[in-house]
Length: 525
Image (cartoon, rainbow, N blue to C red; front, side, top):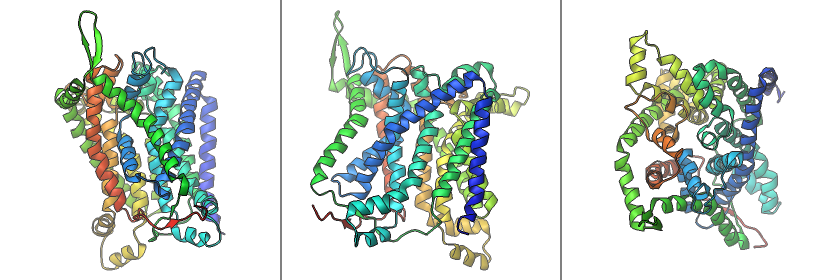
C-alpha cells in the first residue's frame, strides 16, 4: 500500500531511461562521440566538486567551525561569479604567460574539468546545505540520547541527504554539459560546443534534436528518481538545526577550509589582480607590477565598459522578473493538480537539458523572419533575442524553488480562504505569495545572477547595438587575459557581491534556515 503512490513515478523514470538509451544507440557515431566527451566532462566535474562541496557544507552548516559567516559569504559570492570570469581567472593563473605557469599547464579536457569543478563547488555547497537544514532536529536529538554524535550523523543525518546529493549531481552534470564557454576556449569537442561551432553554420536547431532529447529524458528520469527518494511531505520543522562540536579538530578543520578556499578562490583572484597591475616599460620591455595601476584598471573598468554593463543589467533584470512571474504561476498551478506536477517536471527538465547554443538557434528560427515585419524588428533592432536567451537560462531554478516553496503553504489556510470566497489568484496574491516572499526574492536574485552570466545563447542573437558584458568579454578571452580583461573581471566581483549579499540574508529569512541551534557535543572532546 505504501509503495503504490510511487509506481507511476517509477514507471515514468524507467520509460525515460529506456527512451534515452534508444535515442543514444540510434544516433550517429559522431553524436555518440560528442556525448561521450560530454559525459566525461560532467563525470570529472562531479568527481571533484561533489566531495569538496559536501565537505564544506557539512562544516559550515552542521558544525561549530569558526568564521562560518565569512566563509559562507565568500562562497555565495563565488556562486554568482560567471563561468567566463572563472575561466579568465584560471587562464591568468595557469595559462600561457600565467602568473604561476609561464608555459601554461591548462589544456584540453583536464582544464575544462578543473574550471567547471571549481565553479560548481559553491553550487554543491548551496544545495547540500539546504538538505542539511531540512533534516528534522527532533530525530537527531532523540538519537543522541542513545548514541554518540558520529553514529547519529551516519545513521540519521546522512541517509536523509541522498536525495539532495542526487539533486546536486543532476544540477552539476546538466549545467556542465550545456555550457560552451570553457569548452570552446580550450577546444574540447562536447555536445554544446559542437552545436555552437558547427550547427550554427547549418542554421538548423533540429540537428541538435537527438542529443537534446537524450539529455531531457535523462533529466526526467533523474527528477523522477529524486521524487521517489524524497520522503512524503512532513511540513517545516520549527526546531533549530543541531551543530556538532568539532572539539580538538576545530582549528585543523578551519585550516583545511582555508586551504580549499585558497585554491578555489585565492589563486585565480590573485592572478587577476597581478594581471591588472602589470606594467611594461623601457626599450627592453621590462615587466613590473603596480598596485596603483591595478586599482586604476579596476576603478576605470565599469566606465570603459559602461555601455555593455548597462545592457547587461537591463536585460538581466527583465529576464529575472519574467522568470519569477512564470515560475510562480506555473508552480502555483502545478501544486493544485497531478497533471500540473507532471508538467512542472517536464518544463524544468526541458529547460535544464537545452544547451545554450540550441536556445540561441531556436530563437533565430523564431524571430529571424524577414517576411514578418514585427518579428524582423524584434530580431534586428530590439533586445528580444537576448532577453529570451537569458529567460530560458534563468527559469529552471526559480521554477523548482517556487514549486517547493508554494507547496509548504498550509492547505488548511487555503481551504479556509476558499470557503470565504477567495479564488485561486486571490489565494496566491494574498496568502501564498506574501508568506513566501523571502523565497520569491531569493529566487529572483538567483535568476538575476544566472541571467547576468548567460553567454552561450545570447552571443548568437544579440543585435549589434546591444552587446552585453558577457558577450564582449567572451570575445576578449580568446586573445588572452590582459590588464583590461583582468580589471573588468575584478570589477564584476563588486557587482555580484551586491547580488550575493542580499541573497544570503534572504536565505537566512527562510523558515527552515533557523538560527544557530543546539550543539551535539562529542564526549571525547
